[in-house]
Length: 243
Length: 317
Image (tube, each protein chain N blue to C red):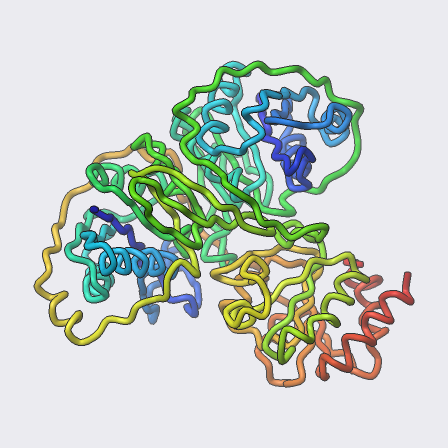
């Protein structure tokens, strides 16, 4: 079985978000980039499947040369080889088009439920649509039984058991697998694993980022004594008007 | 401008978030048609007129009772073509968002999700999107002729204004090949208010010391008609189910009121609650970072404060 894992290269979840150049560019100053946390779950499940059933695992990233440490980390975790589509991942349609271009021939295409920078949460659905194969997200459990994939999908206030046939696209989230930390042997071998750089397929942008903004700053917290909780109820009613 | 609203149902009842989608479409101006798939109550569909839909297309085919994303997206793309739809509006959800994304591909539409407010059409068609898990916004221009918008909770205020909508039976032709996923079973919290839709949320963290102490959280939630949530460690330890986990990698909530009890306020938790209108933090530790992100704070022991707060809420009614 051939598995393709699509990973995003995103700011660490603790990053302070700021913009530069008149709020048109993300400020990367002092920001540490990581494999998208949801993509990391997808990768971990792929490596488990590799270990249990001898699948091959290819990692794909749409990004500029800056993302190579992230790709090497995915290789160190256990992927066999990697593809980098040399482009800035501008929007979901663009990224989905690039993935679909390289995903043919793979049985299972895994990725996170969403990237934690733009949060659209639709690349898996778009890739499935472009390839004419099922897509399921967010998947919390995924097992393969012959050509049938058995999944647990989270829905609002609960979960569903879903089945579909291979080939399939799945957007993953916890607890599909435990995150894997690369060991020294993995890190050493990752340096020599194949990383193919390809140029992107042209896509006419249907969505254009004009600029960014930050939420309005919050006012100071109003402290209320633990001996007077009734005052909180009063304030929530009359001042905040949320009760 | 012709606007089509995809109206989501759960067990035959219209979901509350879909009322917001109708209200959003109405506030945009233009003719608003709604479309509903599968089993639904005729009188309830007529009542959607009150929120701004003039016509409701009801695709009552029983095969649509199973909510298959591929099937829904095919029917919706066709409906957009037949109705001459310019803009498709729906509430973002585990069903709605992927359906919308597929419709965008089928119709060559411009797509935006997590949209918290009305579009700005003064120059082009620009929508705001919530990005970096609520830590920022992007203003994006939707350039293509067809536009597809998945809104975030509270993007529009639901008001009752008009009269009943005209409900039209909508015949569909379904492709067998679109039934490409099969739902075997559901497991759903029963009778509770759904966390992503709740107007008030009461969440507990590690400070609650164990799942056996959740009764006082539930009592307060009950008094407030609130949903219950929890922090990541709490769901990781199995004290509460994963679908209650609020945060960066869990549910992102946008209630009117969020009450956090015994949660220190890690940045990953804040990412899930920063769209809340008002945040109350109750924590024993006066230095808990969550206080900095709160509107109101109480330094105190949850086991002492919560019962008193529940009492005060009940007394105030």
